[in-house]
Length: 411
Image 1 (cartoon, rainbow, N blue to C red):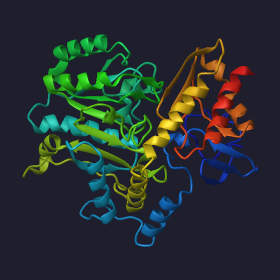
Image 2 (image 1 turned 90 degrees about the horizontal axis):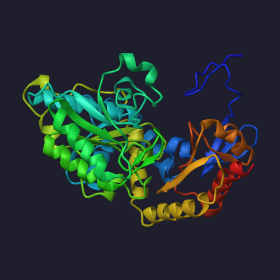
Image 3 (image 1 turned 90 degrees about the vertical axis):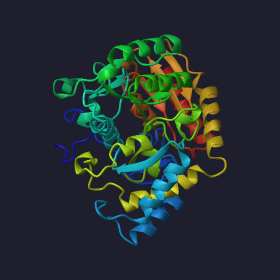
Image 4 (image 1 turned 30 degrees about the vertical axis):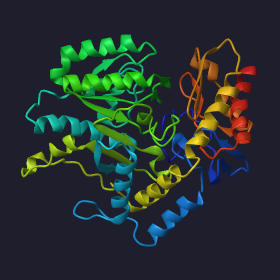
């Protein structure tokens, strides 16, 4: 019988029965058939504080008792006001304004529209192209598909309908060579480039490419030199995933626009925030209605989402938060690097992310079922078997995750 639900990233005709979740608490997902699984990937990297967290539950319940939603066009509310103030406080001083959306993909769409209209409002409409990177992923909606990897990404099927932007090779450990290439490209095309969008330190869904912070520092200098706005997509990297509260904290720079999502609400509700600097905001701050920013998701700044996000940020600022991630990183390095197999191409760890890359995606066939049989939830893609656990994971729970990853190759 065909499913009434159309599930993501799956061929529905060959999709096997999907386990039904009946409850979740801590790092454990409980299934209808009685099985319990340790969530090794934080429900697509979002459930950073674990499931059924008492402080997040309470924030949600308290707000629901007041009101669940109001539109933010012509109205405002305290949870959104508090969240905008908190985000401005915990991000670099250069970022002064916050635009809310309901997903990371839409948050990146907002960033793209901001940079293009910024130059229109400043009288330079010819600056209408984005520069992106190979191995990039910024979401599945149409605008951001156009700045994802055009050849090896999951959206090449739609290339004929997408806006055409510029791409350079993904950053490597050869920073001097990468920056030389970037400088040459800007010199040739900067008159047409509105912004440079990238995932700092870690390109996640595009293949877990980790690269040095020095690249970001020198890219910032080049953006200033050639008058190009810099966008950091920290939907995946934000709120601790790379070992610092934000990946940008491992540099001494600030982007002109910063996009946050996923862990923003601790994985409770969809919400994203697109922060920008004063210079960007001021290009829209005008007596002319034609210069205002014409974007407004129905559920932007949802009070339930904002309330739980405020509570999630409080947890991120508690003593020991980053130390816990450092402990996870050390454990991942100590355990994952023990994996041995001729089919393994590379093993790498950054913050609370551990990746085993294989030579051929066929080498990972059966790994999800194997992990479930051992009581662990993993969802590899392409050539990458990875873990991005909730930060509350215990040493024993994380060891179970890594041992399953390793034992798959032993078997």
